[in-house]
Image (tube, rainbow over all chains, first blue to last red):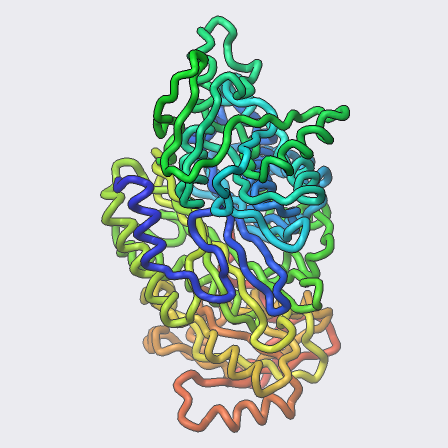
Length: 308
Length: 308
């Protein structure tokens, strides 16, 4: 297949943004403007048996949960509360379809009660193929405007929520908490310049944010919060590498002014479970680099999970 | 699998409608209310190779077109213009995926230019399963409010656009024109009480509209516009039966006051390509019936295409 970047660029050219769409392909979600200037956001993700999970290993409940959670993570990245989910499912004819659907929707229901949205539509079909699920969700900004990837400014501090790496190996990718509460907390109190979720690994997603913002970035390796899911048997260098490239972290990457970043970190410390860690800053010079533990600066390779 | 009606009822109970959703599962689309009282609509449909089409017989261009057209038909039914499409695709690894995607998006592009919406997001994955596509679309009412299935009133005249039957047998289901122009024309000029698209056959869809409206209906067999795609070798009775139950017509079923219906039919005659035909009326008594060609009244069976 044509590579993902070329393919997305082709679709963007074929389908120019038209009002009421304000932001189309290329961010975590699309932004639509209402007549009164308010914004609605739409996100979507398709998960496939044998690609994103394996139904012979994983319960349908966790699959349903994850299919919605990845969309909630996109909404968190946009600074939005979820409003509704639309769930389309293809179920193998041979499966215990009734039980599978009951379990799947139980996983969705847990998140719908936790984050206060409903399932407002969908489509369910039996077929001869493997299990597939597409979830499309709508959301609205916690405050006025959505956050985009493209707003990072030179001098901004780059922050991440939580810790990175080891998600796929340990199964954390099936039960992660989408960072809606953290997104709301940040959005309510501070000025966020840019935000996205780290789905394919910090390295590749940082490149995406900087490309969208027309800026560059420098990370400090020693500051990156490596998840305890990454084996301590690895060398410090390999642990950092895992945190940069394992993918499926579903943490937030945030760009804020140094003053806002300091204020956010200080007020965050008071008893919060989810850390907020400064990992680098935005530069005028394009490209992404990293200061390693010996103080040397290297280019940060585009490494991580590339969607098929 | 649990039957469709039970399954949908189960999901509705599991996910009660929550603001800003005003209308959830059970209509052609979901209605979300904005803070200023304006409405947005979301529709979605999943089409699967081997179920809804067969990629060995049909071009990817027609498949892409149909996957969007069925959603446009739902938007037309709600009295809405399309604003954006979100396209998720699972492509078999062995396929000529680049060519397939190019053709598929060519089919989508035709409709996007005709009906003035953009593709604002989506997801594309390779896998070991057959080809699958989910399209989710957003829309906004042509005028103020959406049309629902539930607004038909006793005494209303029931109208249909176009002609019914023979769509699957002739392949018309792959190239039909979604009735957005007709929906807009009706919505701009007349008061529509209820509207839906005829996707599974007039008989079953009429039952759905009447169940949602808490009313009944009587059709007049002789008035039903049978499509020329239905073989003239069939007896008149069988041709009517085909028009009631073949499905995939994607015409509109409309309930309006007798005065509005007459006015709409009269102003429609002036050179319009798509007919508007009165086929019956809404009754206080529940249930759907039909007056056959000999003047006898029978119960109208729930016949037609039941989704899997």
